[in-house]
Amino acid sequence: MSEKLPKVLSISLSTWHKDSGIHTQTDLFKHYDPDRVAQIYTKSGLPNTPVCNSFFRISENEIIRSVIKRNPVGCRVENGAEADASTQKAMDAEKALYTQAHKKKSWLMTVMREFVWMFGRWKTKALDKFIEEENPDVYFVPIYPVAYMGWLQLHILKKYPRPYVCYLADDNYSYKPCGRNPFAYFHRFMLRRVVKKLAVNCTEMFTITKTEAIDTDNLFGTKSIVLTKGINYDNLEFKEKEVSTPIRMVYTGNLFIGRHASLVEISKALKEINKDGEKITLDIYSPTVMDDKTMEYLNSNGCHFNGAVPKSEVDAIQQGADMVVFVESLEKEHRFDARLSFSTKLTDYFKNGKCIFAIGDKTIAPIEYLRENDCAIIANEYDEIAPQLRKIIENPEMIKKYSRQAYDTGKKNHNENDIKRIFVDTFVKAANKGK
Image: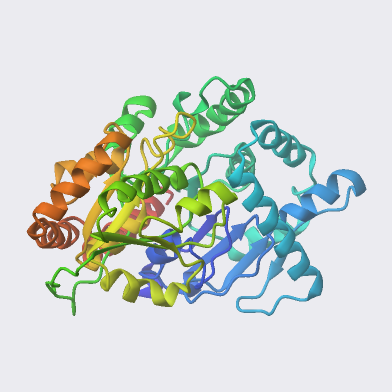
């Protein structure tokens, strides 16, 4: 079987690492032969994954230095290698920079980063040699919200033409996320140019939601294939859990792009609900530490901020909860960030058969999906949070009902066997078009 699989070269933003919180792509490629997969990526970290054996790194920190010193950037790296002192320093600096950027989004800095990449020396003989040695049959080209990734991808596609499969998992084209910020509009103008070139010329297109598929096909004339994270149901069965007293809610994940504000509103609602005794608690597991005022809310009114937790413990934490919380921001500057996206967190909730308490604008794709499948209790505005929570307290059987419906939604729409077939068949089909 593996000899018949086309060789795939993925041109991606992030390092593939088994302990990373970013695992959509590695979950997809676990259905593939690792000897038939290679990756080019643009972060400082080192890969450690069973899904791929060949890697080429173009470190963003090195890109910055190359603008000044004009040294060529990029090298082949080993899977599972230990980071030396300089690599670890670069990784720590990069992590600190991105954490700060997520806390306070600066569109000016985003635009400046694009110009750094524009003048960086990443078009190198080492990059050419890697592509020639790997000699892929087809490219995997995720479309990101940064123009420099598109420039890198388009450079490779032009110099070494092959069929390619795109993957759109967010709204990386419309002006809706820009608000009134002129730098955001300028950045989106740059981004739209590369997104359009990639999308209209791709061999096949994956999107993460049906809503995005319709939007993408209307814009670019593609015939999108909806592809989300799969769930292995072979040895899985629904286990009904008796509702705890008090009812236990759990949130696991980062608090970036305004998500903290939704959790603060839950805390405010719980202040009134729990004034005569705890009826609902909220445990928050997140690596994101916010300002003192936010942290005060996240540690009061029945809320407990527990800090970061290893990925290996997340399933057990979710399974011990009565309800799991899914939030997208309702803040003005972030309200439409998830307009076309679909969080892999939802598939984890489906797999664990948990009642989902969701907060988000009614027009964004993940909330539309939850409503269409009737598999979550939803608040579309902050003032709906308290009434929905009170309804649950008055009728805790709702938790059992929505737990079952979440599990059934996952089994119907996210079965890993279906995802595997679609993913592999699409690359075979795309590669055959190049013959």
